[in-house]
Image 1 (cartoon, one colour):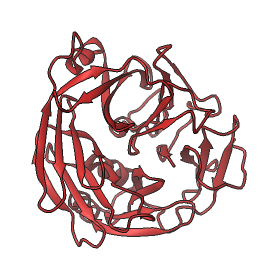
Image 2 (cartoon, rainbow, N blue to C red):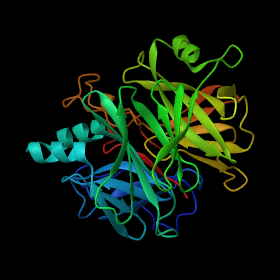
Image 3 (tube, one colour):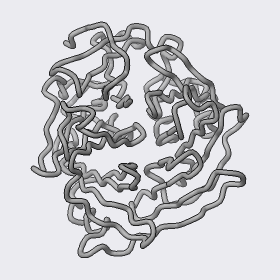
Length: 354
């Protein structure tokens, strides 16, 4: 059981978890990974009005929520402030076509919308932009929307599924192909155009393709992170030899935009990366001394695997159990002792970052 405390202002990274009471769908617990060991906070009725909703992103301290009607809401959990964005077409078709169990609805919507990120904090920039990666008919799409827009603007559809998206400033958008070997750079100022397409050349003996081949027994996810002005590619290896699946390692590369190649990063120094369903973020242990330097903190975002039957569970629903910290120096994964990762973690966890 988590220890319930009054929650402070958002000044450190939190991991949002389901309530202790699994029948309470509107409350959430928050694990403060940079606070004193074992520090948890509980917010009651946090998702009141969003009880059948699904989190599809976390960015600049705000959650991005998709409701049952496929309308997108940008929600600040500590104050309850929210902004409404237009519905996203693919999810809207799902939500209006079927009268289904909420777990099935969440699963289908999660498969249709991979992630939504924001260009900036809506509380500080009223002209923020949202970008969404969505999937439709075996293809993926990239769309964006500014506050006040009546609809999402679709940028493209193609068969190379995108895995992550990152704003670099207010108007520059990086979209990563699922194979981790292609990045489209968009300029969203005025008429959106692709200013650069980066296809990675071999970097020494290391390429993303060879990294994936080396871990062919498992699966991988790729993320884009901005760190100290640089763009990093983070490759996460997930082993299916465990039941259920487990993250076993990470590799980090600097994206050399000018030379269109990857440069392996051996050490992050005092930097710490946070990846998952959230907008990927880099923080410094100079600001958060309790964090482990040169590490990657990760949350489970394998939405397609969370309903697979493991160990005879009644509903075949293990939830977002794959949580932990990977040390680039020691090359080991450590689980959070404070979290029972053998329990069903549903809804899946999300990082909320300052």
